[in-house]
Every structure is written in structure tokens, then in C-alpha cells.
Image (cartoon, rainbow, N blue to C red; front, side, top):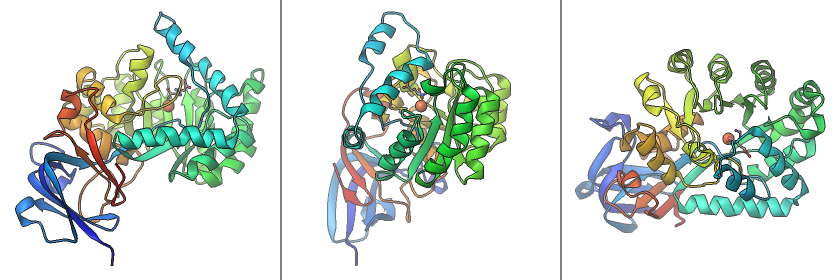
Length: 391
Ligand code: NIG
Ligand code: FE
């Protein structure tokens, strides 16, 4: 029989359990306890009613919330882009072209170097409370380099995304149609076995709406589910295409028309906002308030990558979303947990309720609100992943 642990004396427990929701979507329980049995949550409730278990952990009047679900990152890469960031902070604009720098460094790296780099950022993210993460290819852009990126990622997560359509490979600069044929043909065949998702960067300087539709449709025909980089740098067709194809998520959503917002509100596609990207590119903030008021499901993720958003910190993104994107602290915490799970079409993570995976964060603060109230402070003081205490 698996051993069980009770965490007692929790000042605020965030469950994201809709049956407990009152004025907050977070399903809060005050003075709470959680029982973990093996890799699952077995019980939640008031501390005084907690059942006896093998082990007992005293939370000491601190807050417990679900592990963060980071549904958008690009962690299989080599090198960095410090000079590009420096130039941007002196006034240069961000463009898709910088991706080529990371493609060259990634192609030149060994499997072992990519693995070491990936593990380093995963450890960093775990220490900041991320217990589920999605990650993408997109810095290889050849059949061999894209498939090895996915193979390396798949050893660490089930949420692996084929992004051969990040930009047109520099090798095909004169013939983008031939590159789209490769991405939807031989490269897709090699990559599909290692991935769950297919993504495309739909943007000026990357892929237009017709190319994006062709790429995502080819992926769907191979059993991959679509998600999309949409409307990051300018208005465009990406968001409406996402809804048309029932993509799990449209990511960035920085430049939206009313028709884009209406489309998101009418479908199941989650709007994943990535404030680290706007922070690091000095761009306008996505308007989370507008989306939430329209009834759109919003997720918050890091977009961790060496070009546009070199942060692995979900707490940092939560603080930005509250300060600059019109979210309440409750909404931002929901979006970084249950919202991320929705963007990955998962219901086993992003919540603390009987049967859910025992992925929990212990904060060195009495409530989840402190994530935004105390920005930049390392408040994550304990992490359980699949029932194992890892931090
Ligand atoms: O999500 N927008 C496209 N892809 C990444 C940036 C990648 C890079 O600049 O290396 C993003 O922001
Ligand atoms: Fe991205």
C-alpha cells in the first residue's frame, strides 16, 4: 500500500474546485488540510477534520496551491541572445528574425548539451513551483534537428509540441512553399511519433494564415492537436484560425480585434497570455481584462525562450498580469494553474481535489495573493510533484 501524508495547518488552500467556489473561482478553504495518498490527492477539508495518516507535515499557517501548469515554453535550445536583449533595451524592436541565431546554436549543439540546458531550466522552473510543463521544438528546422529536439523533450514531459513552423528555415529562404511542404511532409512524419501537439508561429516574418491552416491541418490528420502562436506582434488571422480548428490554445493574443475576442468567447480555445514576452520585448501588454469580461478562458504561462522571454518564473508572470494586464490576484493564480491545465486539455492537474495528481506548492506566505503582492520574492518554499516532495 502506498504511504499517505497529511499537510495540516494551511491558512489558505487554493483548490480550484468549482464545487467549492464562492466569490472566488479558486475554491478557497481556510484553515485547511490536504491528504496525499501515493501520487494523488485523497482528501481536502478543514484542518480539524483531517483523517489520521502515516506522515504529518505542519504548513505553519502558510498557503498551499496547485503546482503551476506552464503550458507554453521553448526549452530545447543552445546559446543565448544577450546581445539582442541589450540592443532591444537600447531601442531596437523585437522581430521573428532573431530566432535564426538560436537555430544556428541549437543545430551546432550535441544531444548532451541540449539535455543539460533543458534540465537546468526545468530544475529552475520546478524550484519556482512549476510541476507540469509543455515545451516545443522550433530551433532545429531540419528533419533531424526537429525530431531530436522532440525526442529530448519527450523524456521529460508528455506535453511535447512540434513547432517545425517556427520560422521558414534559412535553408529555404528563397522557397517558403518548399519549406511548408517539408514541415507538412517528411518532417511531420519524423516528428509526430514524439509529440502530442502541433504549433505554428502565425505572424508577419513567419507564416501567414493560409500556411498556418495547411500546417495545423496536416498535423491534425497525423493525430496531433493544434495550438498556435497568434497575434503577438500585430493583428492577424491566427486567433480566428485557432478557433476554427478547435485549437486547444491561442498563445500571445496581444493584438486582438473585437471579432477575435468574440471568436475566442464562442469556442473552447483558451487564450494563453505570456507577459514575460511583453516585458522582455517592451511591447504593449495583452488585455486580460477584456478577454475575461468577454467570458474567454485565460491561461498564463512563461513562454520561456532565449529570445523574447527568458524567464522560467510563473510567479513573475502572475505579478505582471496583476500589475499590468488587469487581472485580479485570484484570476491570475487560477490562470497559472487551472487555466494552464485547460490550455493542455488536462483535468488531472491544476487543481487540488480527490483524484487529482498530488502536485502542490507550499508558499512562504499566508495567502496566494502574496504572489502578486510580493513580486520578485522567492515565496515557493515547498513543492510536491506526483506526491513526492521535491523542493
Ligand atoms: O513565443 N513568437 C515566436 N516564438 C517565441 C520567440 C522565440 C524566439 O525569439 O526565439 C515566442 O515569443
Ligand atoms: Fe512561444
